[in-house]
Image (cartoon, rainbow over all chains, first blue to last red; front, side):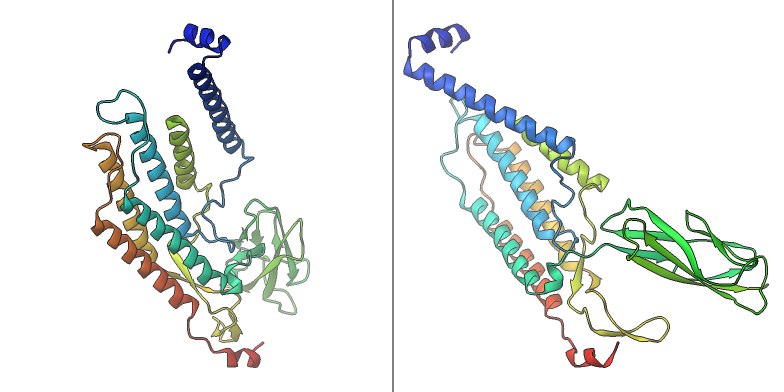
Length: 221
Length: 125
């Protein structure tokens, strides 16, 4: 059906043409929705980062399986519809859905549901792990005058700003120092009285109550 | 529609490979032993703060069978001798996926109901 006959049929209220036009309009709307979804995913409004994550932050194998089967079957269904039936030159739905596919989807869905039930029976399985900071290494032995690099891993908020400080250690002027990158500079030499230990603290700038400690021991050669 | 599906698949696959979609501990399970006593590196008895991670063979086998089944079915669709019909899944594959999921759930249940020593909890700070 070409455009001219579509327009002519529309204005004469031909039923088949009306159905055809409505079909095209619906297809256009669905296409726009699809484009909008893709755009929202691209600009980050629809966040897929936890697409296969469980509530506690770990990735879920059953969700991943569900995702894979959904993609495979929907793509397969689309390819079959577009191919059309043998001998016909137009798209058409298959006459039936094979029982094996339904069984496979049922197995995947049941496995997902049972997995959730097992997980939800443990409160730790549904609680979102709190934001925490972990310093590495937790203990270090550093020669006087040398340097030691510490790193901080912030779970659930990887880009968070952290603050480094020495909360206990040798007194000035032979005190240990640490910069904003976590690089500790050991004192030039032992202090009097001896204080061969220091405590490094890293905390979140936005929430100083979230912190972790590391213990450093200084030694001479 | 095909373009939408392929674009969505491409986005999801790309984000999976680049790490934008979280896949942390994808092949690891957790034993329900939070609060159980253990001896730390300094010889101090403490209580575990969260469930212990363990490398999960049941997840690995489920991943392998899932990807194999998906790839197999897509090849069946591409080489379908009867266009316009969905190829059926052989019973062997259905049984295999059922068994694989049963193994996965069995391992998950075992980790969840791991033997616990709740009596020790009150004796350790």
